[in-house]
Each structure stands twice: as structure tokens, then as C-alpha cells.
Image (tube, rainbow, N blue to C red):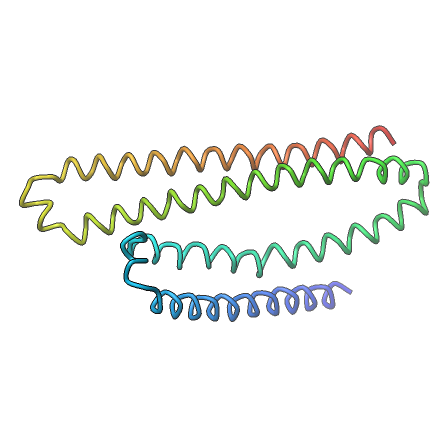
Length: 193
């Protein structure tokens, strides 16, 4: 039984991660092709550093979603359905309390998850600006040195880095609140039941 479980776990992980890798490569190729077709004015608004950072980090985040979060969602859904059937069979009263609490837990989780998604977008934007700043400075290093602006550029980069830390801290708080809420709600439903 353990060997079969290990084999199925390997196959499950391998298939989802391989599919995610192919999907990410395909998406990067298509996105890069679309970037090459944009009007020149587009590049006046969006810098090369920002675009390349987005190409790497945003598409990489999508790869993580495909390779890890979706498979975990499928697995947890199946576990939840099987657990619900067993709970109804073992303790109908506990099952009733859990089923009544589930919509409230779902609504709270959705609100907090939307907040977390918003925060993650802000982190990606701040990180892209940080990469853009580094790209600008390093691309113009001769000019920076001629005008002795190393300290000023270092301070500008440090300020961008502080912004990244600020929005990352906000995302961490929203993520922690989401985790704490779901744990508290689920445990409370079990205790009340």
C-alpha cells in the first residue's frame, strides 16, 4: 500500500509540475512575442526593466499556481468531500454544525483572499519598480559616476527597497490573518459541534 501511495504521489507531482513548466514556457513565449509587437509609445510608459521583471516574476508566480496550488486545491477538495461523508456517517450533529458554519467561513476566507491577492499585486509592482531602478542605474553607470551620483542612486534604490518591504509586510499580515481566520473558524465549528 505504501509503495502504491508513493508511486501515485510521484506521478501526481510529476504530471502537474511538468504541465506547469510547459504552460509557463508557452506563456512566456507568447507574452514576449506580444511585447515585441507593442507600439514604441508603450515603452515610454513601461520601462524594459519593469517589463522583464514582470515577465519573470508574474509568469513564475503563475507557474507556482499551476504546479502547486491547483493540485493542492484538488487534493483538499477530495479530502473534504470524503471527510464530509465520513462526518455525516459518524456524527450527524457535528456535520450539521460544520455545514452551517461553512458558508460563513467561505465568505470570510474569500474576503481575506481577495485582500491578499491585492497585496501580492502591490508587491509585484513595487518589486518591478525596484528592478527598474537597478536597471536604470546600472545601464547608465558611466553617467552616474561622471556626475558623482553613486550615493544619491544608492539612496533612491534603498527607498524603492523600503517600499518593497512595506508592501511585502502588508501582504504577510494579510496572509497571516487569512491563515489564522481559517484555523479559528474551522476549529471553532468543531468545538461548537
